[in-house]
Structure formats: structure tokens, C-alpha cells
Amino acid sequence: MSSRRNFLQKLSIGLSAAALTPLSSPASVFPDLRKPVKQLRVALMGLGGYAGIVARAMKECKLATLTGIVTGTPSKIATWKSNYGIPDKNVYNYDTLHTIANNPEIDLVYVTTPNSLHHKHVLQVAAAGKHVICEKPVADNAQQAREMIAACKKAGVKFYVGYRLHFEPHTRELVRMRKAGEFGNIMHVNNYMGFKIGDPTQWRLKKALAGGGAMMDVGVYALNGARYATGEEPVWVTAQESKTDMVKFAEVDETVTFQLGFPSGVIASCGTTYNFNNYERVYLIGDKGFAELSPAFGYGPIQGRTHLGPMNQPLITHQAAQMDGLADCILNGTPDPGMTGEEGLKDMVVVDAIYESLRKGGEKIYLYKK
Ligand code: NAD
Image (cartoon, rainbow, N blue to C red):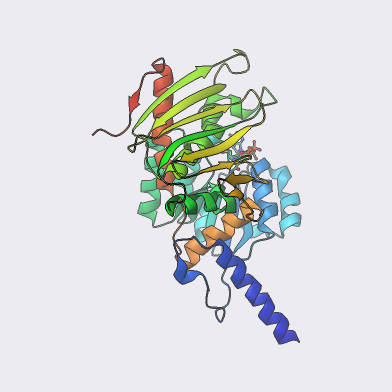
């Protein structure tokens, strides 16, 4: 009985890892169940709202486990230690972070600090010789992203961006169908993501900590989504801005619309805002079909339909799937589905061009010289 239970347990571990395996990796769909399951040991840095969501989700993980924290707020330590069983020796602050290099119980640091600190923190983690996941937006600009990639390469550590949707089943099905030609030639994309922001004193409205406004924070979802909906890299950008509250949005953008031109001739028409809700969609139109995800980018439930009918992909905990999926990439060498630092850099190149277009009154900015 107990060996049957063990077998079923191992099977469920194997199958859930298999369910997360990137589609392009058929060889690893059935991992070798005779091997003990090795886990990626993770420390979370910056114990705010999102770190809490990741930590709770990680309780579902099979291949990743939370073993450490990095925080500048001592009052948070006791709760995190008791909630997640973290020992004192795995608790760090920003001054002791470099000593994480000597800790064999931490393989990776997940940076969930405000945007403009990502560059500094990823460089510090790389210098300590640990793998790193950095939240989106990966940096304030493309130059910072290049420096982060170079630092991780030099240190020989893996560098991923927390683009959790690349492990989300509806999103993956859309990408699979597009790659299989089920939509025919992609003709147009219409993506947007935004919400009405509250507290006017928060760091998201301060340029020095946020790097930018809605575009930096959630516009990157629409942009990243345009890249996975088309499978192409944009060659030009135009952008327009609207600001209705000059006080609240004194330092950062409020509502931005932007257009991306792709080599095939497809135009993605996209938008982002901090000024209203219910603005969240991926809409891809091909000459043989279409796909719509809405909601498309939040924590779920993601909902979708195509020309074939409703999408019936499973509803999952995004952060658990991401952490198990990236652990599988790091531990077992499975290919990642579009979350490397290089993917973050590609988005930052476009974000830089969007802000340049805004500064130049909507001028068309060419990204890659022909
Ligand atoms: P938050 O304000 O809730 O948390 C930020 C944390 O960073 C806090 O614990 C804060 O104490 C800490 N911090 C360290 N140094 C700081 C400093 N100098 N100033 C201010 N705070 C400092 O923010 P959040 O919502 O958790 O966002 C954190 C990051 O995660 C952002 O980059 C954001 O874009 C990203 N995020 C991603 C998702 C996603 O779905 N992938 C969702 C939410 C947030």
C-alpha cells in the first residue's frame, strides 16, 4: 500500500513537472522518476506585496523551495521566519547580502524590490555567485539591462525575468497555436493592460524608484504580449500620452498608447494606464483565425477564446508554475519559454523607444537599422 502511495506521489510530482515543461522540450516531458527530486533553494529579496504572493504560491512548488529572505525591515523577519520555516542563518539585510555567497542553502535570489533598484540588486546577487530572477520591468532602461546580463554572464549565473505568463496555460496555448499556423498569417494585434492606481504617495508614482509610470509597470505586459502574439521583434514604435491629473502623475506617465510595427507588416496597437480599470486584453487576428485573452495578464483566472471556441486551459497559480518551471530550467536544463534577461532587454529597448517617441511628440522611432 505504502509503495503504491509512494509511486502515486512520485507520479504526481513527475506529471506536474511535466505539465510545466516548455513545449519545445519533448525529451524532458517524462523525467527520470528513479532520481530523487532535487529542489532549487530560493531567497526572496524585498518582502513587499509581490514577495508575499510568490512565497505563498511556492508552498505548492515541487522543484523550488523558499529557504531565505533579504530584507531591510527587521520587523518583518519574525513573521516570515515562522510562516516559512526560515532559519536565522538564511536571513539577510542589504548590508550583509554579499555574504550570501557563502551560503550553500541558497541557489537563487528573487529580486522583488521597486523597479529602479533591480539593476543594483541583480548586480549584487550576481557578484555573490547566485542565480537570479528579477521582477518586471527588468530595469529602468536597456543600458541597465545590458549591464545586468553582462554581470550574470561574467559570474556564470542564470538570469531570468518574472514574466510569469510564459508558464500560464492559456498564454502558452495561444503561442502554440500561433507557432502551429492555426491563425494563419498574423494580421493585427491589439493589447492593453492598466488599472486605477490608489495611494498617491506610493513608490510607483516616484520616478526615482519606479523608472516610469504605467508604461514601465504594466505597459510591459502589453508589449511583451505583442512580441509573443506575433513571434516577431518590432522595428518601429510610435507613442502618445494623456495626463488628466498633473499632481498625482507629476513624475510619471499616466496613460500611454503605443504602436509597434513588425517586419511582416503587422501593427500592434497597445495601451496602458494608471487611470482606469477593466483594461486588460490580448487580441490577435490572423487571416485564418483569432485569439482573445481577457483578462490576459493578471493573476487569473485568465480567460480566452479563439475562432474554434472557448479556451479550456487549466487555471493555475502563476507564481508556483513559474518557480517550478524556472527551477526545472536551472536544475534540469530544460529550455526556458521566454523569460531570460535577454527577453527583458528586448522589452526595454522598446520601452526606451516609446519614451523617446513621447518626448518627441509621437515621432516614429526606428529600433533596428536596416
Ligand atoms: P511593494 O511596495 O509591495 O514591495 C516592495 C518591497 O521592496 C518592500 O518590501 C520594500 O520595503 C522593499 N524596498 C527595498 N528597498 C526599498 C526602497 N529603497 N524603497 C522602497 N521600498 C524598498 O511592491 P510590489 O508590488 O511587491 O512590487 C515589487 C516589484 O515586483 C516591482 O518591480 C513590481 O513591478 C513587481 N511586481 C510584479 C508582479 C507580477 O505579477 N510579476 C506583480 C506585482 C509587482
